[in-house]
Amino acid sequence: MNSALKWKLIAGFVLVFLAGGATGVFISATTAHYFFGAHHHGFAAQAMKNRLQWQLKLTDEQMAKISPIVEKTGAKLEEIRGDTGRRVRDTIAESHREIAPLLTPEQQQRLKQMEERHRRWFQHHRRGPFTPAPEMSPE
Image 1: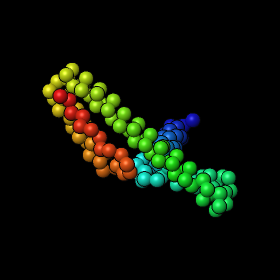
Image 2: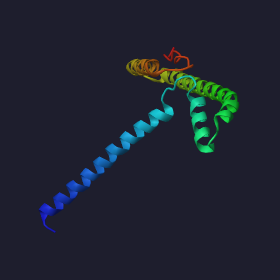
Image 3: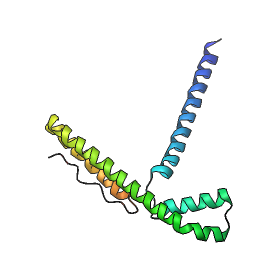
Image 4: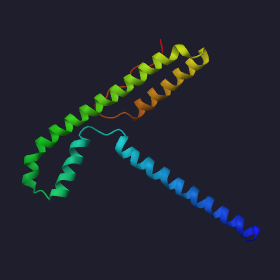
């Protein structure tokens, strides 16, 4: 195999690898936004209704009968999601409070900046019945 062909093959493999990586990042970002992104109030119930109606081929009369049940379930799911988010934020805040005394003053400042960036991102992307992230600065 001559040198020119060898380099063309290597370049081709690198391009295919980069194209696959870019595709994976795009698909992951799109999918993650759907599953983990902020959803409006009633999103879970509406998604359940759509799925049930499509998969079970429900009539309008059946949809009218099950709607209150699905609405109640959706509200419970949104409450669970909100509680889980608060628990995650509280756990991270607690770990930051424990970590902070072990850091240098410069590292503590960086930790505060990380928390502030997270708080701004969360407030910017927050929708629905969730509360803002609690203050997480180390004390």
